[in-house]
Image (tube, rainbow, N blue to C red):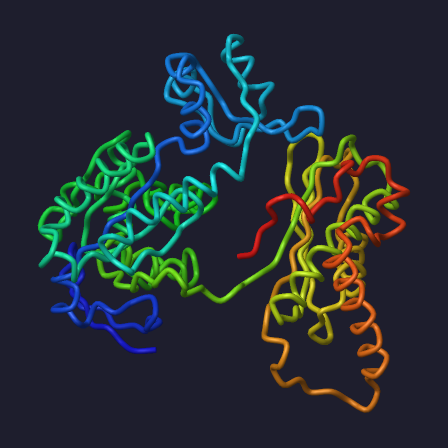
Length: 442
């Protein structure tokens, strides 16, 4: 941690405080001055990949959607024609059809999306080895040291844009700026197939009048909190006292103040670098609504199987669990608890998840989907304080048993050994949930 002493733009008052080193490094202005950061975003990625093989649909409204039979019927991506009807990513396919009855629905093909994503990243790596993925379709690039070979950031961005279009048939929007936050803002400002520059000289003019939720880190819940306090734009955040922002939003309030003022200076990581894993989670929408506690428990067991496997595979342990519940009226609730000791055991994750569900959930209506996340992650070899009352030898036996199950599945397939809950609960998907889907590691 270190202190700052910055003159407030509106009042002229100098403000003191403390901010985390990895969030704020704006004391070194010379380092910031020379940075050239790109954010490259593939336009309507899933839909664009699908339309490469179906060019006759390009002018028609098209979405990529999940299976309506398995009740995964949400809009994963849409083309610009569908967007003109007000269709939004994340809404149900049935809602989208209500807005546009002539909508064409295409099934997703994740293998193709991964293949094209890798091909595009190879193009990025022609210009720099500092390529940090932000999902399957977005990347940050630090091209600060590439200017001697390839020219300015704008020129590099345009070359990349043309290369992606020629070699893959896809288009990107790119933002060029002096930090990651403003580069991301730039790529969002002009779509599709465009480059936007936000410089240190004109960022206030270009972005301070934008709604606050346009900035990375401001979701709808945060935006509502700011709105009720009269903070509507990015400029309002920048001109608010940072201590007041912390009062409103905790530590994140000061982080947003840093972002809005252009002081963010976190590095772009190399491709082989990874951020520390903060949680491991998986969720599923069942084929029919869950009506009983037993059906919820069966679903939690199946989700916990995958989470436990990933904890052990990544040599991690968890000291808590969170359970997310989506009811059939689409309202969402999340509950969490801490464990007495860190664990890698599937049974501990499942029991903890069920305990917090029983303790905190009030049944109002049937449950549509369940998500389980292992939280408070640490390395498996991190020292732990035990007591004479802990039965840790028995814990070790259970861990060896679950690792043996992992080895059996690795050699003979995911269905070679499974829990009785999967066989008992007919509302679980026919595929073993979590083992074939694209689950999340944060």
